[in-house]
Length: 157
Image 1 (cartoon, rainbow, N blue to C red):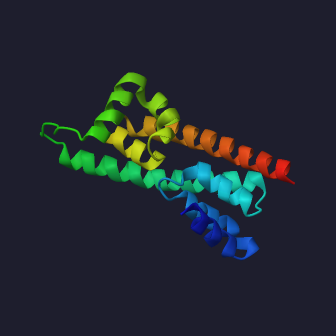
Image 2: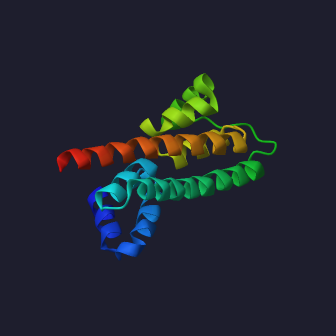
């Protein structure tokens, strides 16, 4: 899948490849970290690759957060919470233990930022806190992977 996404971004004209990276980074499980790597590998300036990967991931995450918040607001009025699936229980346990900041920073190891942020909002976490910490986490993860890819490419030369 990553190779296909890389081929997609690389197939665009050089002046539009950044748009391809932005779109690719908006896909759950690709996120800013693999988006930044794809951008660096296809030859974008690392700063540009990381920046557009972060923007694509943030835009996608915001759609999930606002959508989940809207649904939760309408559905949860006067209703008891239902039993969680094992995967959601795992996120809930981490959320209860580490809070919004901890889950946001470590969450990408378990699930994409879009799913992690939506889950936290569905648990009742403040929407703005989730957005803030998810943006911080997306920047950190995207930068770390983008820098690593850039260093790896420069060492391979």
